[in-house]
Figure (cartoon, helix red, strand yellow):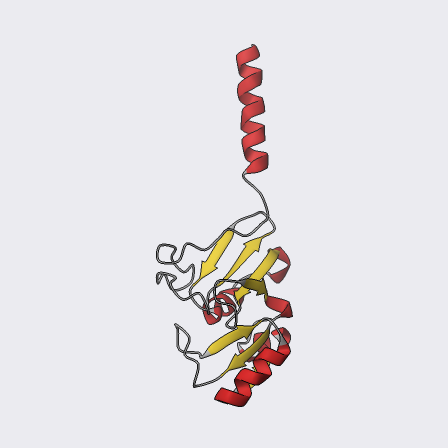
Length: 146
């Protein structure tokens, strides 16, 4: 009988700890994009979100994540992160980032969409490369995400 209780307790603990709602590191060169299935290699354009249940979705480009969001219920998402173009490999909260679409800065899927950790950095990149700046709600509207 003790063995049954120990097994049940272990299963409950495993279930509890397997549902952490936190991001995982993207394994560049081996993780695949949840939307287009390409291997994620670009540390300046990757993105990810985590659902309220802890399920991970990783993307090779911000536009892949945004396109995938059009099929999701936004209330079911706990964390949305995008790579900071100005800080390769560093992820920032998607709603707080500033976005630039510029023909001079190529992204993996061709939308030329980059995220910046600060508005001033995005403005400097726009002054240098041209393009248009967006905040998170404007970006979602541009990609028809409701």
